[in-house]
Every structure is written in C-alpha cells, then in structure tokens.
Image 1 (cartoon, rainbow, N blue to C red):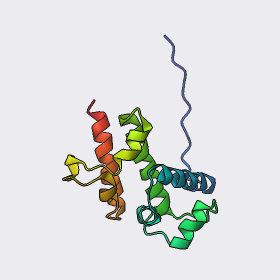
Image 2 (image 1 turned 180 degrees about the vertical axis):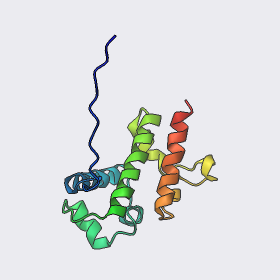
Image 3 (image 1 turned 135 degrees about the vertical axis):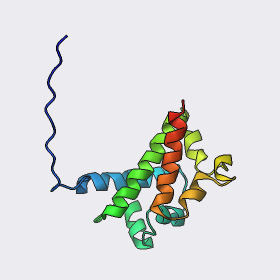
Image 4 (image 1 turned 120 degrees about the vertical axis):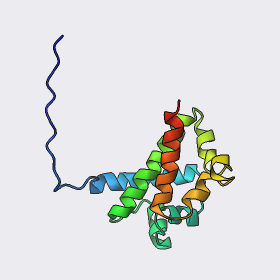
Length: 137
C-alpha cells in the first residue's frame, strides 16, 4: 500500500488567525445564534464581553465594524458551545432550549447562567463541559 505525501502547511505568524472577513461572518452567525437562543439584548451584550448597546444594535442591523481579538475569541467559543449542543441533541430546538434549562451539573443553574457571569473563562468552562459530555460516549 502506498501513501500520498502530504505537503506541510507553511506557518504564517504574520497573518491573523481569523481574517477580517471571517470575523464579520462569525459576527453575523453569532447574531443568528443568539436569536435561536432567544437571548435578550443585555444577555447578548454580556456574552460578547459587555459590548456597547449601540454596537450591538448595529450588529443586529448587519453593520459589523472592526472586531478585536477578545471578541473573536468569545465568538469562536460560543460557536464551539453551539457545535457541542448540536452533537448532543439531534433535535436542534432541544439544544437551543438547553441553554436556559436548569442543570444538576451546575447546581441547578443553566448554561446561560454560567455564561452570564461575563468572563471569557465562563464560556470556556461551558464549552469544556459540553466537550466532556460528548466525549464520554
């Protein structure tokens, strides 16, 4: 059996991990995800690192401006949470609803309660929990 040689990818530390176009697409996707999760504007803004009300309003209208590194990281983690829920629940509505349901693993708090503490580490903790739940199967 012969194997094809895979060419290594050249490292480009001079390029951002997420391009401006990718970040804008990620922002639009995040707005749609928050609609599916039925988040209030305040909840959405907290999850996005205490985003200004005016900026959030512009995002909802589709006017995405410059997105800093922290915000890109937050949105990437939120997409990971969404992905984890899609793996765990074949019915997407159940996954969207899970965000607000009390969970014994969180002492009766919901996933949203955990994320609403506002720190990026809270988002990471929830994503790690979902990854562990999925990996246990």
